[in-house]
Image: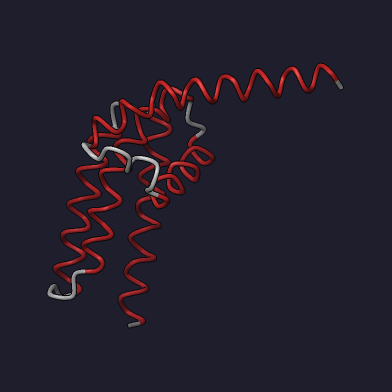
Length: 133
């Protein structure tokens, strides 16, 4: 029981250290003082990616700022009512391609292949949503 409590304490301490060290860096990269932690879409996507791609802690640190850049762009684009579905799809594709370019050097070849499959599924789901509207 004490061993488990000690392990838990060490994990909590390590996580607190990671947050303390990485949060200011992420906020500086984003230029959004205080906003880095308020992007649930990026955090949710990171967790899903981490599970499917088996990301290392170092990879997670590199991927999070990329996702935090992508999420608001996608959200803004989805909310833009002045664009037609085809224009939105093309711009979403460009945002996704930019993200993919940044992800490729971080992921190993197997992870990148899985990432591409995940992107293909996302695109298919978006197309289905557009057709159902």
